[in-house]
Image (cartoon, rainbow, N blue to C red; front, side, top):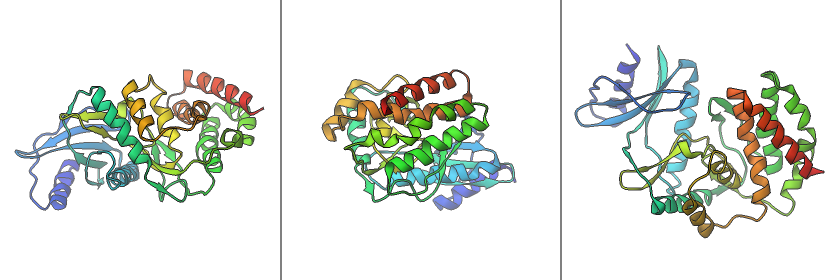
Length: 293
């Protein structure tokens, strides 16, 4: 049985009615997974494929999408099913036709994201690990946010960077890791439900203009981490930030902490892509370490 036979059978089982798929059509996607549009005469689905040993990555993504969906705060694609076949792993999602956003759409995105962040719990982390891009993301629960960020975000990525040929970054970060609490003096964040990987490529708008977020790296943490990443690769439109601040204003220390939070994503890019990201990480570590002295 081919992977497409397995997928069609799984869709049929999940939906409780036969799904007779036609020839899959290539879809738009990122650099990690292959993506396809799969349809019959009446229904259409978005399918991600990867190697069989990465099936756990799709299970974690499905769990993250369901966690966000259950918050009833912001739209995500509905999870149909996920699984493994002899020749690969798959994740099947609701197919959404995207349109173009405007200021009103981005304003709604800011409001919806703030409502997502207002879903909180007592510990930082999550009940399972997942991935950030294709890198493992450790979510072991902790009552201390600085400890969580030090151990499971920065230290994890720095150790991985050392294994990948960038040991100097770990050596340069000792002061930053030792004095991380400086950034949280007088600030105690709540454990908010986060998208976890919120850059401009991971949101869109439905044909009706409704905000949709996808490809999450879900966990519970400081909401500022999501906001920081929105600024990392060019930023979101002003209407988004204005709406977020109206709904739930940020602490004044955000302007300093956002660089600490974005260091995690730059280190992840070092580990995924190398190149100029290593120099960017070096500069960020140097600047952040200076603030600790």
